Image (cartoon, rainbow over all chains, first blue to last red; front, top):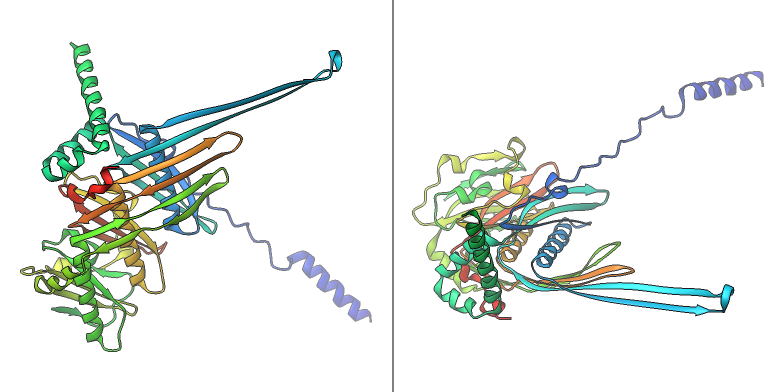
Length: 193
Length: 245
């Protein structure tokens, strides 16, 4: 009996001294920093930029989500119809000092975008593993101003396509933008003089 | 026809496979096939696949779109209906135009290079490269800017059959190329007590004379990348009905 108790004491001491499995350092979670171009998108008067991120278990879907929202953001920068709807409700219940005023105020802003983007491209893409998901970062670039003018020049080179395209509403919109840009350039040049 | 006999080690590819855009050959096309009991059969299937890919590269119509529901807790995919179509009769003509240059046999797939007649592959093009020993190309992080070509990148994870990964990456690259040329974006967003947005994108584009410019496999993440390009003078690629709405 005495030897059994001694054995138990020795085992208990050994366990308390060395532990069951030893102490392992905690696995450090790797946090990948977001790309520099995501937190600080480039600025260029000839391009519109939109940086977006999205996650999904499917890598391609994560990229598609980020790219599509970035394109929608560019479309919003380019052309957006904003509708505001404000509702306010006020009531007074009771009289004099016991009066209770209830107020309800709500505001909804609706943004509608419908446009065609020609020449938009995913200028930068990056992804990281985020647990079971992939997190994709995308920077979409869209030419405006001089870059848009270059697009138009290339388009005019193809006469057949140009004729078809010219008749479209998109051409008019783009032509207006290019004309505005030309006027702006003239104004800048006259200021310089 | 050269044939790289035997089973090559994984993650090793000939230069012509990684950088077909750098070849000094007309219409380089790669065809794939699954392994067959007879090696000859697999090679023939890969060549036939190359003929079909040639037809796709001549003119590939991509139409359809997809929608997303963006809410404060995340973005949800509402489905897509992209359709790719091409004139398969061009594959018959490819037989008179293309010549098989090199075929590589792997455990899980076979791939072959076809080019226009009169092309001789250099030793550099035939040399095998191990992706681990190479630095990732710059285009993996974003599409190149070029005055002559539109570029787009597609990628895919590793599947049981490596062939599936390359094909999926190429499919997404083509879809992204179509989006670069023309994307119709519609969205309705509401910002109030809760914010939400529905985004719909559509691409009605005909890709003409596009080609695979480069391929890359990330050996650490097991992700397959394909870079495709199309000459910029091919603005006729816009579908007429797409710009008249």
